[in-house]
Length: 455
Ligand code: LU0
Ligand code: CA
Ligand code: ZN
Image (cartoon, rainbow, N blue to C red; front, side, top):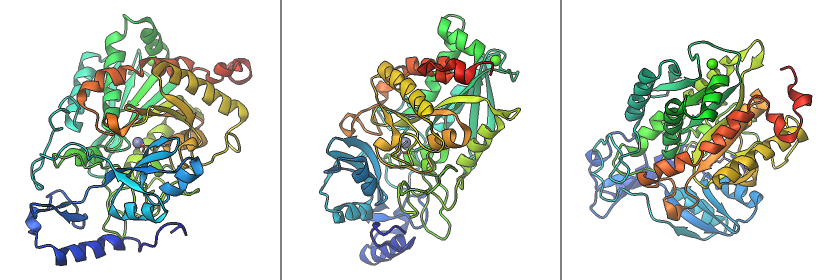
């Protein structure tokens, strides 16, 4: 445990809290959510029914630098939004207390929809009213299967492994002559590492739909499918996504659903679990109760293992075929590039030319969608994030997009479904730009001859 982390016995908080609550509350055990893990934190409500304690969003005024935000994140909260002199965090009660102990005042923000949700214990399979156009895992799979059936020459589906709870993790390949492994630059799009970031699945579905339906009529898309192999992993965290909607009220869940060893806590933050500089730099937590719990070891999450193995499988003749990538998240409207584990722009594993290429392409993509471009650690330090791994381990020009909205006030992690068409198509141009540059990213800084000739 880091010295600046508030004193907390690993895994002990839940046990103590649960014991106190069971003494203090006369709520029937049967009223707990059926799909809640045995020791999920619970809290009484006005109707006397015991319900799972959900984390809340808070505005925290004060943190104004990456270092101050990194120190704040060390309490185990997630930082969802940054401003010049404030942030928005997601925190449970203990984490909120830890943030107050750092001397900050917290203002609680409205909870996500679901106040009129069915009582705990009811299993809900769909998104609530106002969100029906979001795709559940089953609906997304159906839509994907229909597209594969309609465009068998352009789109193929592979199951690359399964999640902790056994859901298939899919990789869709889009290319002309899709059944052949051609020597073409490959580009990877991944979505939904974080359970509550449902808009990212819609982003992946938009790309699948757009690339298939516009092939043959849109010149740029046709050219890209003719000359690239595009991989889309539409749902890296299907268990977390299902859990987030299963009670009828959004749970603001971030992690996967894998129990932590020797603990009552559930969930690893997948975007702190990748095997590059894992846990190196105070950019993740070793406490299973925390939002940014990195897991017991690098790539301990099955979902991370599955996608890591898939990426490794694209090394052919000793060369990684995937040249560029975007991992979609929400929210804040940002285009981010590595490294996240260090504030330094360059250093071991990142030359000045690499950095300049990242920044040039990143800024151009951001100019197309109106997002803010910056190095990931400008927000706060992260370690074990996917784009650090993709670059640090595989030399893939990997970006993180934080999609719509820019603030909690515009819906935060839960914008209404009416925004889906606008906010997914908003990234069409950026995605095309990345595809077009993927044969030689260094062209962006005028160094094609130096880096790409003949390769
Ligand atoms: O994993 C995260 O903390 C990301 C940002 C990093 C990629 C720098 N933010 S999110 O969790 O709010 N999507
Ligand atoms: Ca092809
Ligand atoms: Zn995220």
